[in-house]
Amino acid sequence: MDMSPLMQKKFDSYPTHIRLILLNIRDIILQVADREQVAGLEETLKWGQPSYIAKSASSIRIDWSHQDPGHYRIYFICNTTLLSTFRELYPTSFHYEKNRAIVLALTADIPLAAFTHCISMAFNYHKIKHLPLLGN
Image (tube, rainbow, N blue to C red; front, side):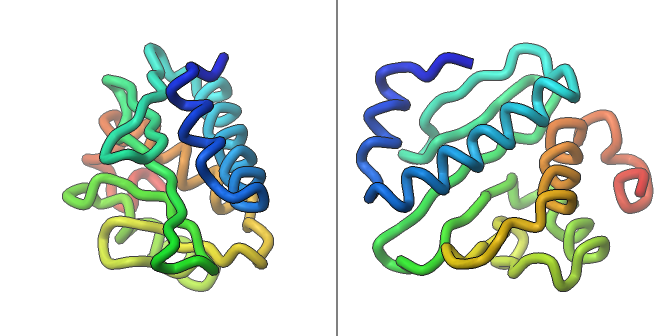
């Protein structure tokens, strides 16, 4: 997916080391979307954060803040069962912020298999939300 000038401006606003990490997260999200054949995926800014939205999916946002400079977050819609499922499946793979975000340290490696599975569940949420543990 080509990046719009608006999105490029947003990514360029991050410090270089943060930008590289978030661009990597973006690539992972787009790879999962491609693998899952997510139709109509839109990359946009929501609440000033890079966001990935599709009609069949639960939206995903990513961001970093000066208020917590050692971490970045992947946000999910808080009234879904996504975060409770992630906690159940991956209790030690991530840190969680209430029912809204996965929190990752800038210095930590991304647990890639667990992370891509979480992104996949978000992209398939409307198909699997009725299943216990979202079908896992």
